[in-house]
Length: 92
Length: 250
Ligand SMILES: Nc1nc2c(ncn2[C@@H]2O[C@H](COP(=O)(O)OP(=O)(O)OP(=O)(O)O)[C@@H](O)[C@H]2O)c(=O)[nH]1
Ligand SMILES: [Mg+2]
Image (cartoon, rainbow over all chains, first blue to last red):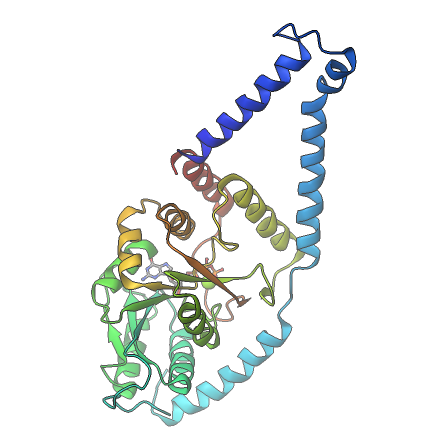
């Protein structure tokens, strides 16, 4: 099953449950509160997921390591390598 | 340095590591990356070969590669040039055909991928018997150098989106510093259809699909010092297109 299918399957399952409760399709005569809570659920979920995404990406950007030490080490090694290669007879 | 022919029996194993180095206009970087590779392979006492796949670089990269082969020997430096620029994906396939190692290491020749991590890749692989080990900029001590806020944001955002949509089981999909068992790489390459940059992403996704095990090693990615970037322009467009294709087909 492709990832797209997995998502569609998940979405339709959730959607079905949501519709069943919100519109009381099975005529279970659920208490009114259930329907009132279920009705705006998709929006809540979307907003929650949006906030989670923004927070996660923001945090990861802020904590993305700057490898200054690695860059410095590389520079030193480049100097060393050039010298050694010249001694070994490399012509550029 | 231990550049003499290693005919003495290895204590531990006879694993051999073939490094594939695709180059296009890397005249300045190539000697440096080769020097560093020799340094770390030598220090670790590993059996290895470096396969340079140059695509007819106009700057004379091949000529430099030939000089390096003279200095370090034909058993260490293997040249597999091609006439013209045929792209990165096919360069790997071409290089792999000539590889004699049972493990293959793929990396860029522009010094963004530092050979000091290779011993860590190898140890990681041995530790877990992994089918492939991928370098990651996004975990542990991994990171980048020379990136501004905008680039970090795009990178992290794209990575997050990919993780959500594909759940690939690896944290760095677009990085191309990896170690593969040779047969694993062969079977992956056979199945991968993407071109260019998305290719790296597809490799990991397919690996996951085929239930290959993936190990990860944090790496520092230092932006190229010499030479020009060959990618760019509509990188984001092709990334999104590739992501959606993988989303719909894997
Ligand atoms: N043989 C071959 N090598 C290539 C080709 N295109 C790129 N390369 C090499 O592949 C590696 C990665 O290419 P880069 O240009 O560094 O791509 P990048 O790392 O995404 O971008 P920058 O680091 O920003 O330049 C380098 O070693 C290049 O020399 C190609 O068509 N043929
Ligand atoms: Mg690069």
